[in-house]
Length: 160
Length: 160
Length: 160
Length: 160
Image (spheres, rainbow over the protein chains, first blue to last red):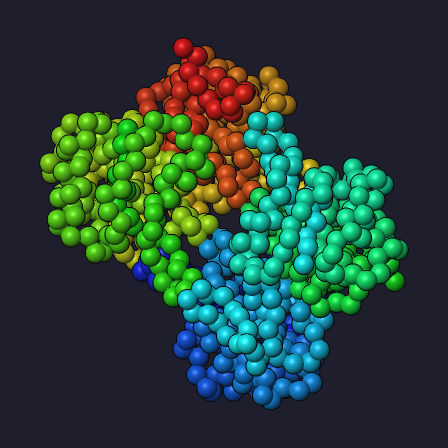
């Protein structure tokens, strides 16, 4: 199984000197250790960006890495704001793999993050769902062509 | 979906006055809120025991509640030491339901628990796996008749 | 003893919806409870501002509240960026009170904050130091007329 | 300034394999780093015991180390159950030093500990109080000959 890291709230840190949020390294290894995760995982950081700043070419890079990956099961950590856009880019092309995008509303380093819960559910969904592209958030799993983030509540929901 | 709480490390607290660990209320509501879980869940506490002290009649109570539940999908939080025993009791009888047992190695209240990760994965596995009884720990899922806790490492593994 | 809350990193929260930091209520009550603090304290929020945005008239408000307070010992929670400026305004006027300003480099809600440590030290310094105005940060205590924040390291130091 | 570590709830850890609490290394360095403490400190672990199991000869060892220390200011981390006994042993002998004992009701590793708050206050009290032996708990400071732990409430109070 493979995990691609792209950034997002998941991995944001607080800069003590200027009070701003920023990216350094991914916390994924630390989170998997905290979860005592024993699944065989190959983690690779593709980028470290806020998903509001993710470009079309960033999404092509993600798509290329998924297509070239020899693994059939892939989890992608991603900012929640445009997670549905990346899911659509992947969903329209990917055929013989199960890909689950997940993220967090609160940075992991802030101590009360939903990230660990979402990561646990994403790793479970990717092991059990049929080929396709999905978003795992809030304990639920959505197909790429039937999901949006409700900007007002911050939760994910089906289109219809 | 339904969650039955039976105690276990998950819900242990630290007594400031005598320095011992004890059970008070379940932290499941708090954990689901932290995980921003939006799955429709009916939570019921059946007992609050250390799984080393769980008796045969305790396991019959759990089995009865599962059989009488109208929900097809059930998650059970349980101490890890005898989780495999309860899974076997359920596995030999349950037919038309998907039941996932999960737990934690570190109490949730201790701030660096694997519980949130396991809960996320258990809720995902129960939504996607076929009827049967399973244990979800360490990011993995095991069938009730092919799992044991390795007492030395504290992790779960297949029998063969 | 009295505590005046003015905001600062201490009390910043993370907004899940837009990913920005903001002020809501002070976490001081929660922090004092966590510290099992049994000192008799009267807490009052004067404002909730980032200290970079604190104006001269804000500082006059703080000074007025200190002068009008019947308590001889006062702790003020304050953003670190201009803590030395407010300390100077108070220090040039206050005569018969002990006032200790303190703050944090990391928001309390982020789980790994220096705030609890600083609060503990500020409450101890205010109980034991002679009349005057002080800044308590990094386990140390500085007189108002001999302190600056080193912007590069984020720590406080004496002028000479 | 010097810190002597003797164990106590402060430094207890949770053993995942048998669910018991135990001592490994002190967390003091980690706590001081979290508190961004910049005080010059020399930390030395004298023992790692539950204070209920501390013997008379353990207390002599602590006393000897205090007397032989060249530092005038010493903080001692100690279990709360017999903190007053050790304070008395030191108080009856120590003359030209300021010694502050402190501890925690909740282990530091459990994520919601009073330890960081108490450590901050102890380090401040030791810098400002006249020679003598004190206990710093709950934001307060008690002289060695006028303090007891109220076993029912878990807080420290004056004898009269």
